[in-house]
Structure formats: C-alpha cells, structure tokens
Image (cartoon, rainbow, N blue to C red; front, side):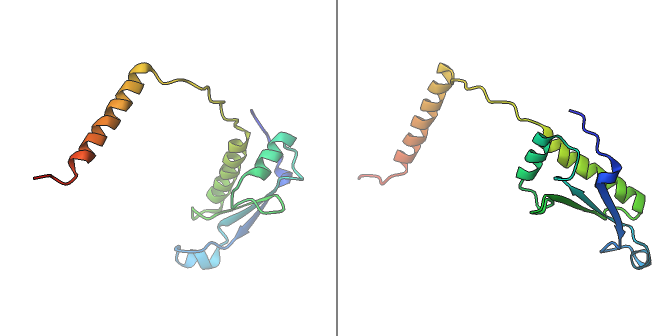
Length: 132
C-alpha cells in the first residue's frame, strides 16, 4: 500500500543537537524536530486508527507523532533521517499480519516428544538417593 503525505502536514523545526560535536553543537542547529498530527492528516481512517493504537513512545496522547533526529552532524541528513523514520512508523502500521493457520503435529513428532520426555524423566529418577 503506497501512502503519500503532503509536506504541509509535516512540521519540521531545526533545533540544537545534544552530545558530541565540539563547537559545531553550540553554533549550528543541526537536529530536526518532526511533528506529525495523525488526526489532522490525510491518511486513510483505518491507517489513522492503527497508528493511534500503537504503543510507541513517539506518539503522544493527543495523537501527534514526535521524532527527534540528531544522529548526523548535518541538518539535511537529519531531516532525511526523520522523514525516513516517520515513513517506517506509518509503514509498520499499514502492514496487516498474516492470519495463522492451525496445524496438527505429525505422529512422528509426537512420538519424539514423548520419548524425550521419558528420557528426561529417567535422568531425574537416576539423580535420586541410592539404596544400599
């Protein structure tokens, strides 16, 4: 399923990054703060519902996805990283898991299982006290 999100629905703000980076950290706003409102977006309703039901710490109680990208030292790479992470999060919500088909174990596998249980039980019996 291909979903396109208009740029107007994504808020991108450049902020100062934390951590290592020398003087560059103090001077340049390289980190990107991405905000995406699920409720106000043009996503299909079923996709919105799946996103709201996700237990992800990046999704606030108001239904706003907040992603902070500061992995790279350049603002452009962090912007690409934030958008890729948003795309991955939305993509994970659109994937529907395949329904499991119930199967029965084969007769041979049941026999092997019971034999291994009997062997394990025998080993435990042998660990007991020895009568003189």
